[in-house]
Structures are given as structure tokens and as C-alpha cells.
Image (cartoon, rainbow over all chains, first blue to last red; front, side, top):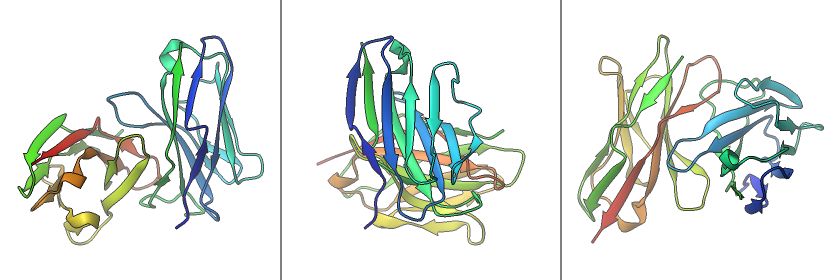
Amino acid sequence: EAEVAQSPRYKITEKSQAVAFWCDPISGHATLYWYRQILGQGPELLVQFQDESVVDDSQLPKDRFSAERLKGVDSTLKIQPAELGDSAMYLCASSLEDSGGAGETQYFGPGTRLLVL
Amino acid sequence: AQSVTQLDSQVPVFEEAPVELRCNYSSSVSVYLFWYVQYPNQGLQLLLKYLSGSTLVKGINGFEAEFNKSQTSFHLRKPSVHISDTAEYFCAVSDGTASKLTFGTGTRLQVTL
């Protein structure tokens, strides 16, 4: 069964350092999402891609976060500089719908757990 | 804008007992509703979703949910739980025009012998 891949699974970094997360969606999935899940809360959307284009990044803290999906396949989320409050689980998800359609099932990866010291 | 409220942060239940996890939503437009499950240190897995049609939706692992528009609710039920159902359960909503999901804060289901 095809799965969304994410790496690394765990990351410990010091504040002010740069950190990057990678996501490889299910093959053929046009839509890719990055979510942040703070401990004890539900996931919150950071950015949504349709192929290589950003559809929604309204909740992405653009002063320190950046995301790209250059070839419309895999994606990288970067934080620079990291702050203590960035400690969270970062989840990547993908869906098949090539028009970002509502109701389409999102398939989640295992996540990257970030700890900022 | 949509929002989701999961009133119960934790639900303890004995194995083989029935369970209901509550979810209420608010939205000014038609919505799609979802339940996801998250096992420890894993991503989320879709249990079921309501898009339209029958208000009773059946999902995987014996779970079902009922969409109640007048109550703005989408409660998740299982008639007999197993130890393996211990996990975090998230209710989510999208507004029917975009795929962005808004999640609730989650309910931890703890099944014991």
C-alpha cells in the first residue's frame, strides 16, 4: 500500500538554528499539505500545494518558515531560525484530487517530531 | 469560518463496551465532516467521512458516525471497543468548496480490560 514518506522522524535542534523536513507524497497525488500539530491539539494547516503552486499559506509564519515543491512531487519545509515555540509534530499529507477538491481524502505521513532546545 | 468542538478530551471505557465520541461543528455554509484516528507516534488515518446522502456513515474498524444538521453534530460510535482502539480521535470539517481541514482538539479513547 502506497504511503506518504517523511524524514527525519525525529529532530532535536537548538533555538536559532535552521531545520528542514522532507515529504514524499503518494505517487500521483497532486495536492500536498503541511500541518503543524502542537502537543494536545489538532493539526493546523501551514501550507497547501497544488502541484508546484502554493494554494494556501495564510497560516505559515513567513518570517521564519518556507516551503517548496519545485517539481510538483516531493516537498521541503524549512524553519530558520527555530524558536522554542516551534516544538511540535510536523505532518505531511497528500490527496489525489488534481483540483484540490473538497471532500477528497487526505493521506498522512508519520510526521516529524521537532524539539527545539 | 468553520470550527470544531470536541467536548471530551479523554474517554475511558472498558473493553467490549460501547462508546460515543462527540463532535460539534459550526459553519455558515454546507460542510464535509471527517473522523481521523491517530495512534501513538503515527500520522492520522481516515476512519470515515460524510459528504452527502445518508446521514449514517460507516467506516473502518467497526466505527460509524451520524450527521445531524439540526444539532450541528457528527458523533462517532462503536458498539463494542477493543484494546487496540486506544488512540487519539480527531473530528475535522471542510467548507465544501476547498479541501482545507479544520480539526478539533482531539479525544483520547482509553480502552481497558
